[in-house]
Amino acid sequence: MSDQSRGLYDAFGLTIESDIPLKELRHASPGAVPDIRFINHPIGRDLPGREDGIVMDYADPAGTVMAWPDVAAFRLVDKSTVWVEKYPEVPESYVAFPILGPIMAWMLNWREFFVIHASAIDINGKTIALMGDKMAGKSTTAAAFVRAGYPLITDDLLAITFDESGKPVCHPAFPQLKLADDAAASIQVEGAEALPLVYEGFSKRQHKLAAMRTEKASLDCLATLDRGGSEPALHTFDTPAAIAAINRFSYMPRFADAPWTPADKARHFKACATLADKARVARLQIPDALSRLHETVELVAKALDRIEA
Image (cartoon, rainbow, N blue to C red):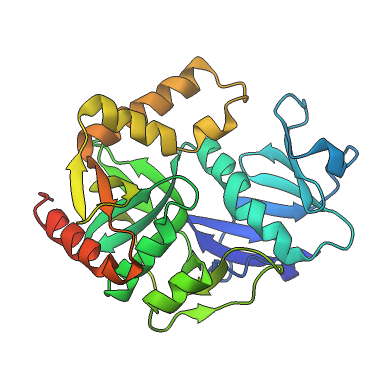
């Protein structure tokens, strides 16, 4: 594909050029200089078979290889370049999934962002990050905030840097939420466009939002989601529990087999400790009923309003 036909996008404070259409992302200004390029290019070795499962090869001397059989294989050549080799007959829409998940998380970490698996919302100029295990309701809870008029910052990868004083800074991703159909029907975010399922049987569909926050934001609260109980509540962690929660939901442990250097590990721990020091870290208890999510929204908005800027 020629340079002229490559897509040019904006996400995480970076300009991304891609041969693979990334319809989820905002388009960048024409002529913007790419920070990361996704290029259709053979990865230089045989594609793994289905029996091999997901491949994460950090030892290949030509660059880390990650592969999802029947979707695509990737060679992470350097901090700016990723080769993409799609399996034959695979729709390009499938390939965007690993690109905007594990591949982007690795590239952001490589560029010294601190990456957390979380949704994040701007609440009157302050940010809460919603952390949780798969199916914990991060996107559903984020949708309730968006319905109440609070802008989305990200829904999956939260990319963080730190300013000169150590305060965390969030870099917005793209204006979409992944929602199960029952959650979308219950919450009904105004102006959200429900997109077709990527493939039949997929549990969630993307909902394209009319707007989101596009400027960098503070990070004032990180909350692990705990569904159940009779009333919404926010329970602040002590420092050791806060550091443990941030580490658990950060992306680096997902690549536990990678050959992290002592400097990598030290940077990761310092980021966890700095976040625990600079932001409130808490457990957010959320009643199960989707019809009561507005109560959680009101509780969190009041709690963030009391946090000093």
